[in-house]
Image 1 (cartoon, rainbow, N blue to C red):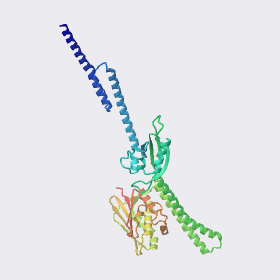
Image 2: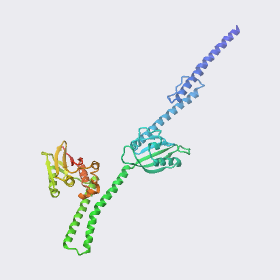
Image 3: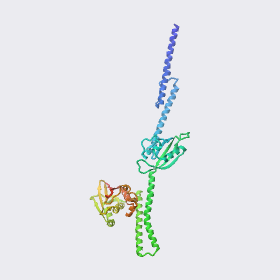
Image 4: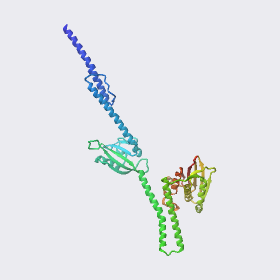
Length: 428
């Protein structure tokens, strides 16, 4: 009997211990392992364990602190990545970050749009995307030397006719304590517009020099002749007349340059007043009647009735209209001969007044039309200089009209004449 009692007592004790072990040790351990597995998978939600076993109390506290720390680090990392993304995407310079083997990790929006790249270039070699040995060399030197490298180069870009001029800064990316670079940061600054402006400036200086050189050479030639003496009165009068004519040409060129400069800098003050644009145009035709008669060009004027007045600077608008008519008189004659006619028309079109100049000349070649309002641009290049003028007239027209809030257009078919039209806004 006592042995049976002790056996039962032992079984009860063993069962109690087993129940205690399962409840206080095994179940909390399983719950702890499940929580740890969740954390390793990136789920950093707060750790709340149901068991309060003393065996795992400290481990539970440590695990909770670890989860909270990892959650904070994850949030900080996400914020930093967002900040980096915003900074890169808001930059106007192209930014490319590569690995140490020069495979692209990041390319910002500016770099992609600047060079018409595919939406995703991640993982591609730098030389595959930018087919340039110079660019590859700058990046490679940055990796090898660990120093900032700079360079300037020219690239052919898909979808762009002109080559793209770049200033490149390449900096090696190194983690603290590491000897070798982990990658390269490339900042690509597009200076194509600057190079274009430099080219325009050089061309402008060359054109101005040419325009000044011709009349000055003629004037100097006649002055040398007069200095030698022995010149009769007829030659004297001829020399003075030629020098005066070319002096006036120089003065007109200077005035045209000053007009364009003031208009482009918007520093000119327009004396705006209500003006009858039809009457202004008829006045221009009268002023240029001697030239139209000399060239044998018939000028027809058509002005619609009941036109509203427009707010313009009469002096500046007279300049624009005169330049357009002079251009039509000089370049509007048919190539194969025949009667030259210039038809001028003023009419209302919606909220605008249009002034059109139509000629029956040879027209403007298609490749020249987009450049025709540029300073010193001439159709046919130097061969067109024989028609006279400084090459600034149409540029003045564009600047004067734009200063009045208007626009000027050109429609021309080679061999079928040209149509220049000024549109001026009518204030209600």
